[in-house]
Image (tube, rainbow, N blue to C red):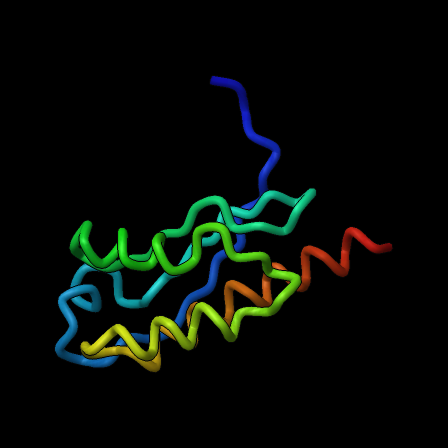
Length: 109
């Protein structure tokens, strides 16, 4: 398999006490792998402990076009995720999107 022409944008935020991920990682990290030609998210991951939660994030974000912003997948996440750290996770998602925006602005120059 060849190297894909993608970019990775990551975001982080502080987790609240009581989350298992805080004990392991200290922060919540969200990673978005983006096709820079289409701005579609082709892969997503986060520092959740369980594969199920990682798969959940991937399901929500995969295929989303970042030219449409980040609010739609975050809204889906908010409606479907009920656990500690919801605000921190959303903050990390927004941070990853901000990193993508920085990348895009660098490409325009």
